[in-house]
Amino acid sequence: MTKQAPPSRRGRPTAEEAELRHQQLLDVAIESFIKNGFTATSITDIAQKMGMTKRTVYSLYESKEQLFKAAVLRDMQSMSIPEESYRELESESLRDTLIAVSLNRIEMYMGGRGQNIQKLLDSESARFPELVALNYRQNPVPVRNYIASLLKRHKKLGHIKLQTPETTAEMYLHMSVGSTVACLSRGTLKNNNASINRHVRWIVDVFLDGISKK
Image 1 (tube, rainbow, N blue to C red):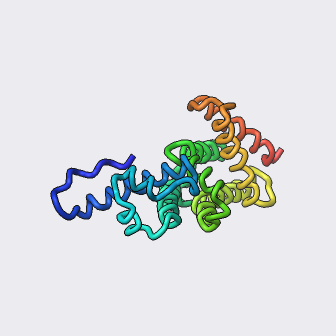
Image 2 (cartoon, one colour):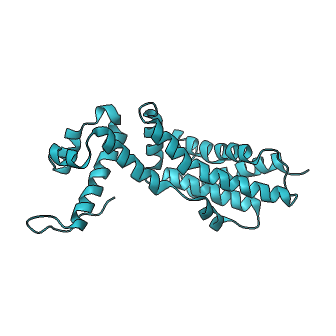
Image 3 (cartoon, rainbow, N blue to C red):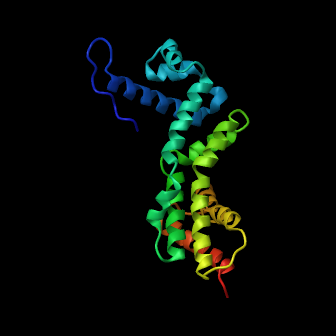
């Protein structure tokens, strides 16, 4: 949640107060878009929830489309992890590294608004294809590239066999992160650390069994 702005003096708000108010506007907007969808959400409703006039909202964003993009982009960026950051999770064990990276991604999707942002983008993909493309570049691509480089290194060491590291990495993410998030969403997997860890370890073991040199 965005913290409350400090009590304002009479007159023009400070830069800090204005920025906090702006972040609150984006919070209210994204929550409204997630709950109601783009079409059913109105600037009037958002302004009323904020205690603002429509004119004030339109002074910041010329259209509902611009407000949607700004709200979604802010949350997308908060979920984005650069490729080099995954190296902090790396250990000598390929198995342990894959488990750590997968759990990191699952926590990102299930925590905060990650899963809801992804659903919102899926539902509005035809209207905002540029946001969908940007989200793909900012989120799945860096972790896919990291896992591909990790697999290449372990292949070079003679630990595993594979032909296409990038495709294999993408397949692994669908298996470990995508399927786990789907099971959690459907309620077929208990949403607790023990169940999630056990599920991810099982997937990693199945994956490594398929690419290990026997």
